[in-house]
Length: 496
Ligand SMILES: C[S@@+](CC[C@H](N)C(=O)[O-])C[C@H]1O[C@@H](n2cnc3c(N)ncnc32)[C@H](O)[C@@H]1O
Image 1: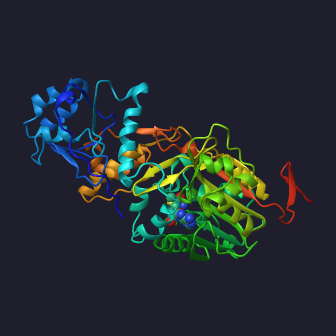
Image 2 (image 1 turned 90 degrees about the vertical axis):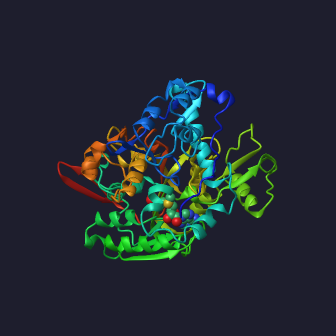
Image 3 (image 1 turned 90 degrees about the horizontal axis):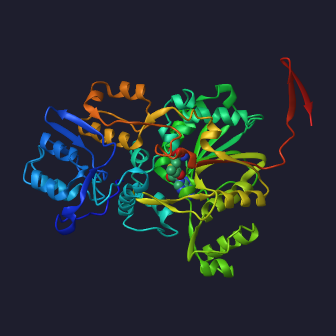
């Protein structure tokens, strides 16, 4: 499924617009296809690549904050700017619209610290365009998206490359930032360190496993005899993804099964599961929008709103005094955690990871074709404790022990390079490339690229990894574990 961005009319170059200055966007990635042909990618990937000749390139370079739109029109307006034959005027009318986002016209610069917001505004506009709606998109929207709109998806990695790129997807190949491991293998090492594989979990359930890379890699990290007696069950709301999950889990050596269901109502009996793994799926679960009136009276206008208000009351979630007119509340993730409490065996565990916040109310995050919602972790944790869980909470980079200063290719640059590669029929997957890895992947193409740039993996400008959190849950009451202390290489066991 490809998102259709809202169509925007070209900008009329008249009146005040003529006096504005032009800036091309920072870090633009260009590909020199021939001696006199350079390619650029509009932000909206439904639009064809922009192909420029030297005149077009000069016009782009002249957008340095010192040239007005009028002067650019005067100099380049009638000149042919590329092999597709459009004159400068055609480009000048389009490049500053959000779909293109190749430049900005204004009285002041868009970049720098104070003005950064203007680039963000452009991005926000195009994101609104992806869905055609602002803000909240309704309580049934996410379920509909996964049930209906993704029915054709999952034949390749495209959905996760472009529509909802996830951390585990970016790290599905071994990566220097993860000590040369994949996300799934490192996750297994960390879960083992927590002691969650002693004793062996018999029933492992992965919720919302996407294309199944995590299942495969978790399996590869264990030896065949270690996996004996374990069942790996993939559960997903999207049928086509589920098939991939089960086949990749099998490729990882698991005794694998799958079930199509919603994580908010798990199809398992009480106390039947040992371990649950859930990566980047809670932001897809049902949000509700509660009004100030509902929050202050405790009375919901619908059954779903009442359910949310009952959770707030029971777990005594602080709602504050200065309430806005309406707030978003993570009903779905709370239903999910309540279901975990029901299905986990005493002593069972759950690993949950998703982007989120610790204070305030969740905000919508626009993605192509659908909107996700930040997880409000202080609410979720308070409810987990109210249910009886023991919980631990930390950032994903902390949990994984990521090397924060590993340099990886900017994700925006990766999307652009992927578009260039598609145009020349060269395979290129989206992932977190270090410089040597990109060099090896692109070979002869690399010297023809300009503007490729790298970020520290922990830099918010890369993927905002610090916003991704990990919630570790343990249901008390498991069989007592053999405890040991280590002294001079000897282990001294005691049974508590
Ligand atoms: C953003 S993807 C994450 C995929 C994968 N875990 C990863 O980290 O790349 C969300 C996944 O959860 C599934 N999903 C979304 N809402 C769900 C729900 N309510 N119950 C079960 N699965 C859901 C989607 O079909 C998809 O496989």
